[in-house]
Picture 1 (cartoon, helix red, strand yellow):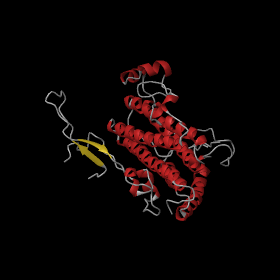
Picture 2: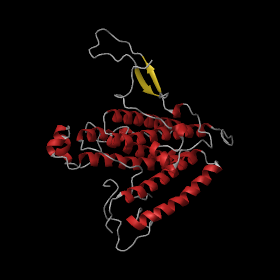
Picture 3: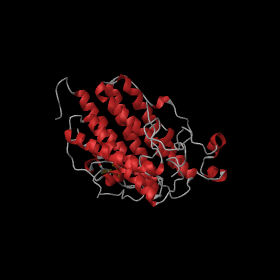
Picture 4: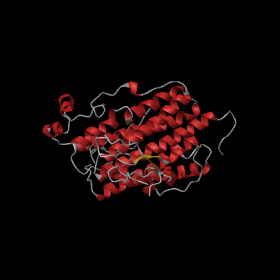
Length: 189
Length: 74
Length: 87
């Protein structure tokens, strides 16, 4: 069961109408290393991983949905009230034809999201290593997104999301350490 | 100085068409250097934590956009 | 209830986001450090603080959560704007 909370995890401010940046941000909405992929990857891996790390996958997976909503907010604000002509100039003409200004789960090139972006191998170490890699790739994507905008407000929210990838990576690395422990041997306090 | 950045010098050919970037950089954020977070690390205040994206300064990683960054490090 | 998006609104929302963020961080930390009593104590302390701030917010701006996780006034204001991406 999930409960919705009517607020963003972190404020999203955008200082100008910029549909081109919205197009780039779609990589983190419906791209291979985006927030949708992250949330679905972790929540789906929960069912076949040792009980000790199910809580972590649940909580990080849930937080990713909060990040998905932040990305949606950025795209929504950057394209709100943009004219078809402006969208076309930003390379979103093909998007407009299929979706008007609606959001859709696709990457920055308009390729629709697919489950082949994620994996559940059933091997706890393989799955956690995939999760660590996913966090590092998302961190890199946020870096390149920050490079592509001069909007300091937008950069601020993107820097927050980049830092979250770092913390998640840290926790997944710790989860690997926990699974390496032999039964009844404690590696930490 | 951001010590979470590493630099390398790529090979440069006289036939490279774009003006060469002599030194390139990449991020090496703190989670790479902490095996398991020790307890009782110093914390940010709640407002700072939200601003920085983490409760612990030890996990904080600044990022400067590439355009503003000195790629031509040492 | 018509919500006016003034300085006071953003300030209270920011307070809530800050305290909730501390709870997210402590939650993930405790997932891998379940025996850290100091962190558990801090978690419970912030959970109580969170309730107070959320109560102040909901009194002014309506319910934060659905499915009975927040009390509701009359009329039912859950489906009233603004939604999080609109503010």
